[in-house]
Length: 375
Image (cartoon, rainbow, N blue to C red; front, side, top):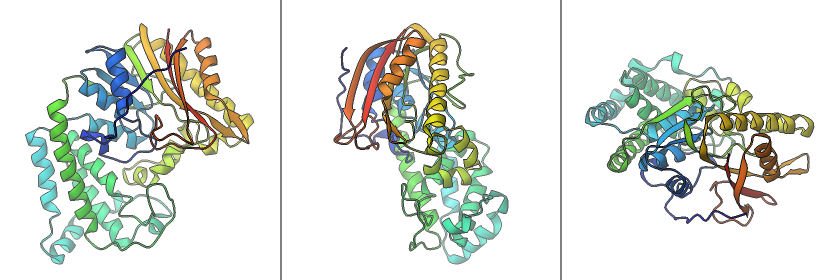
């Protein structure tokens, strides 16, 4: 069985790839090289766990159509914005919003808050005061209010992604991955400075992306990979994805504050998320549930993939009640049940890897696999 050879590059945040933080991102060179080698222009690429949108961004650069699915609203928003191009009128609307938050004085700032603060934009979250200072809550509400008034969906999403980006830096949360409240030297108007800086950076990157983006169609849905309702039979030429690793990472928790402020309910995302800790903490419950989810997903893969299509899955081992779950064995069994054959497997130890397939994922004593399958 052959190993797929991928050449890595140190530049992993080019163009729109650094719009928004997201855990366990694909190194963009992975989807780029796979898409180029195993599909042709005009083909359709599917990522049913679209995450930050790396796969579909690369598909859009290589003139492949793309379909992205995810249960996490932050993932859906990120992918839509990363794969869209703003025209001149769109950019003017963005800059008009930035002008509204260029306060000449504290008086202007106070007037802005008084005019735009809307308690309906404040999440109904019992611990809100624990994570955000009172004036920051008012600022976030006012900023979201002026964004929500925009009728242009593309522009609104662009600004909402910038809004989502600055939520953790302006909060009391220590960092993106450390969920403790700490004292920060956050001052009034810091939010608006951070937001303006991020949006201006995104505008520059959007211009660069526009020069390289093809005219391919990218569609992104807030949906469940276990039932690909939006995807037609035998309409996909290439599936490239990384399902959540069992009992390893809780994506809903990483984005909990953002999900709240974007108007969604984290508990709903948590309930639906595959393989996260709260559903996988017992072997006799979590393991069968995870396998059943993957089985449904593989069945859908069989339905939507063309007869000559390829599947690339990146997946890692797991530990559950001190029992090691070999994910390669799991995929082999699911492949057999769904009439797929494994063409190649590339593996590596996560502990010693300097660049794992999912760049931010690193756990001792586990292996990560890139598996290529066909019908």
